[in-house]
Amino acid sequence: MTFQANPDESPAEPSRSAAEPSRRRSGALIMAGALIAIMAGSTLFLAGWTLGRQAAQQPGTPVSEQEAWQPFWDTYAAITERYAGGPVDRPALVQGAIKGMIAALNDPFSYYMTPDEFKASLQGISGQFSGIGTTVGTVDARGSNASCTPLSATCRLAIESVIPGSPAEQAGLLPGDVIAGIDGTGVDGLTVDQTTQRIRGPKDTTVTLSIVRGTAAPFSVTITRANILQPEVSTRTLAGGAVGYIKLAGFSDQASIDFKAAVAADVKAGRKALVIDLRGDPGGFVTAARDIASQFLAGGTVFWEQDAAGTLTEVTAEPGGAATDPSIKGGVLVDGGTASASEIVSAALHDHGRAELVGSKTYGKGTVQQWTQLEGDNGGFRLTIARWLTPDKVWINGTGITPDVVVPNQATRPGQDPVLDAGLGALGFAPG
Image (cartoon, one colour):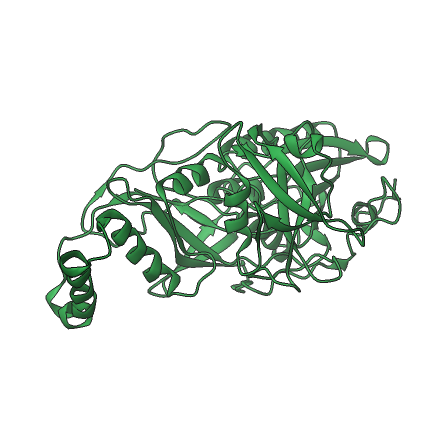
């Protein structure tokens, strides 16, 4: 089974795609809403992922590739026929071969997952997962948001937000805490997605994190995992009710519905300025990204998708957006945790002149991963199968998007939010 999907506790792409070059296809599973639902061929982002169709591989080795594959089959035969160190676990052998092939691509967003890892990774797509209740991203050695991979001394894993009422909050974890180890093992060399999978796990199991907080001595905390439902859309008003504020934490189908309702409510109330907070949002369904951007675009390109053959496909805005009136101004708050679908929306609104971007440089996730569930009990894998480009045909992968107004997301006192203050200023309103 192949999927296109998004990371839950990390910074994770485009198109309702049927982009799978296989000879045989069957039905597709897709995650949507607060629960996992069944539908056909969608795409997600966080790190930008795709949920597609199941594809059965043609058995045997194509004649044209027999010479290239002969060393592989020679090795497999030698192991299965002559290895004397003990019983040969053939499924483990096959899974190891798959893992090695994908690892040889040297792509941090393409990797093999065991059956348990594959199942767990799908649970977080809709905003519901079993874990501790945090979102994480990367910071540099000084603690400033940074778009980097893999983790190292200069690319550290840090908590971006803690879900209220979650095990993480009850354990006393705070935004800005650096996670240096998971269950006694360091995180250097891993991607954010890989650490997310290690932090998450079945309900009522425990995970021990090594935490670095500021200049204090590192400490360990053991947390019992629970089922987490992360709210994806939250709203309030600012500037005495004159400005609508919408915070997005994900891009599920339900988030798209809730976002559209929030925008419509603000417009109906007569508000001419809206702040869209995408800080720490790792992305989600590409269809949700298109629908959310369409609330501000009367038409035109939302993004371009480029497949492995180099073919460009234009994805355009859907009609009927609630805030397409040019008199309605927008401000989008971004940071290093703004990734994939969040970057699609940010770039679309920016390139069409519908919003100013405020904050720090975004994550820089410009590729699409497709999730494939292997036949039998063999897990699955994620594979980069496309790029996405901004409306101006810029590929932001690895570079991110630099905001119009650059503001470090570093408060000097509790309750202060300099990025939000700057966003209000960009819209012509006083902070506070």
